[in-house]
Length: 258
Image (cartoon, rainbow, N blue to C red):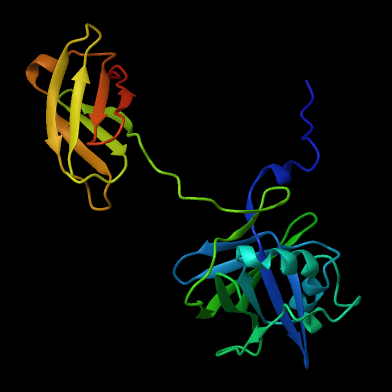
């Protein structure tokens, strides 16, 4: 059996597209980085991954700051253009599609028109076999009053459609001890905030474990006491119901010896 990975496997995945700006003297270079991500929440860190042929990679290695604009769907043509030429080919900022915003903390302007633009101070450079990841701390954010859906890469460029509507509960369950099980579940929001938990034995007999409210973040997580009659239900199923949603089921594995 071959363990070789198919070529260009990364194109099967989805990534976000950023427009990265780097200042050198009086000039600013803009390039597209289709691997642009958030990598820490507080403080907010963003990373852009650049290939060996990127002039921006060379400029960033010698610098200490950059800006990145996460593209909206209206910037597909600009993203394609900015990724097709290097700063040694042409001054891409002469395109009328490139409009800069004034920086507030750094010296690097940011491209207008995206979902979010961040001024970043370079914090780390992570080398990989071919690419390099440049990690910056966001020190200023620029959020437009309105914006369209994000522009993403999945082979070609795509925009996102309507949000996925959750219609079903997903549940898991395990024994805590001989008298207690822990049940976890997620599901869509409901007008009546309740979760009904039922234990079903291998004989098909149901044991009602009650109706319970959501946990702090709208999901369900609780330890439930088993009635005496249900403490020998090895191989049982747990059913979790939520108003307006398909129920979720979990296998309750046999208790393990202490």
